[in-house]
Length: 405
Ligand code: FAD
Image 1 (tube, protein in one colour):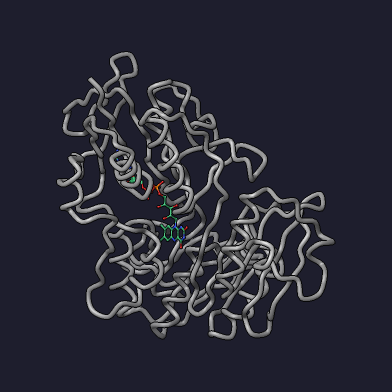
Image 2 (cartoon, rainbow, N blue to C red; image 1 turned 90 degrees about the vertical axis):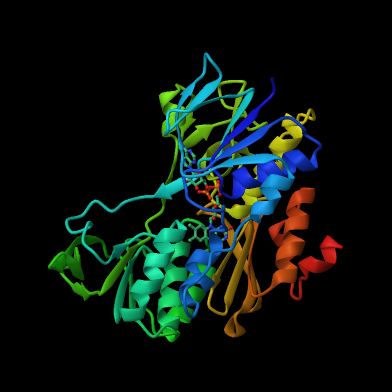
């Protein structure tokens, strides 16, 4: 009998169940979650959730009624612990087993931990789940100083929220500029100035080697430089690692994530992987890659829903991402390499501009700040594979929106 089992009820898993029903898929669907309660949206956890008055609420991905109405069985707080590929069955933590005709791994990612002395002290936080965000929200009501380790998206969104709540924030980054893995030098520098003007202290080229505490509570972070950074709370935001353990134990092929083909199928024809955990051939990156974004999770799910409903569909969507850091609304379309060239258009002094990135003379990515129309146009242009060169864009008054219409 046909039965699709989905491991993980995050953005990818829930979208898959939804899109399968929208495609007219009538066979049973079981969505297995290792978290308690309704599946929820993660992006607000590092933004509005932290600044909310009173007790903040998570935003559910779907109301409970949705699961009943669409005949989707949601199993909560009971992770899949083992895959038996020869029997096409999974075992749950409570020992129950489920047989599948197709198994979809949508297990996401988890925070990379910082292996330094003191990392276990009270007051040291990570930010991925609703319960971690709730702990941080209440820690912010008493903290006066916070140290953030890592100037990536999550670290800087948290820093912005903490500063809004009047806390003295220091962000310590090992590299020389923020969000360097993804952003151009020009956009990084905008955020350096913006956060500095908001009163956030940014320290680059510094690594935290220990956390110090008293009565098991953190009170300082110690840098390799010898500097001590006083901190009532420490937030570690040094990236994530894909949840690949189930796949590895089942002898599926893994790289930096669960390896899949253009149809998002793993090395087993009955098992698929989508979202943050999947390492897939990415047309726009020009190489197999793993992405961490809501768009990637949702569009993977939509493509796979078509395949599982009988229309084999390769995945080729343009990657895009957003990060809101206070009034600075950043949107990125496409994928740039570190060495890609940049051209800036717009009004940087007023915080409204775009950076166009190029490789071998062709457009790879557009970073837009407070310019949503340019972002939408960039997605259209990148999807159309129109060849835009550096010379096309270098002209004064260039307007991408005109080309996209
Ligand atoms: P997840 O959302 O991680 O869901 C996977 C689920 O599977 C988890 O609940 C996990 O616990 C569960 N699971 C793991 N193993 C098992 C198992 N064996 N059995 C059952 N369940 C299992 N992206 C953006 O584009 N813009 C943003 O502004 C943005 N902000 C973010 C802010 C925060 C605080 C975080 C944490 C992420 C943010 N992201 C943002 C990234 C985005 O949320 C992720 O890319 C997205 O959640 C990925 O969805 P997913 O379903 O692949 O994984």
